[in-house]
Length: 233
Image (cartoon, rainbow, N blue to C red; front, side, top):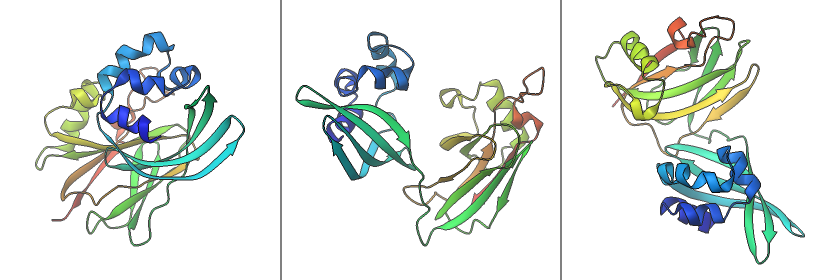
């Protein structure tokens, strides 16, 4: 895993893919290995991965699993990594997301997602927070957390982001940073945990998934599924 992370952070697409099985490449990128290199080369290493911990290694013959805790941007991610031995090399055969616990001492902010609104439960008194997200709705929802400029009308940002296609690379003026995102099926819950406290500033929560019951497939945010909060500083 350490060599995989080193290849990723070093933007070595060929070395990175060499450490994945054909099945892992197909699962992660949706195309065979010979078609994956170009797309991987465009995105690899951005943002860099910080390896936090490897634990719970289980080996059985030519297969193994290991828990891989790392950062993805500013967010803590835990994945169970399936590995297989091919010749004298262990290769990654798949990733499975694992629950991430909000650490003791970090303020938990509940986030309820419904059609079509976010409800925050808790006060953001500083940046040392984690989000416990619960989808109480009947549709799948996403949570996009973005740091946004002071003074920018939230409704205008929603329209601009929707027009840009909800792509971070096309983020409109007023969106300073995409901090975190996640998707949640109906009834699903999950935590968003940060590697360090959020910086002071203004933040928006958005869901741009389409309304599956709307013939126009209107994004949820255009139906009011957005809110904001500020981190004092």
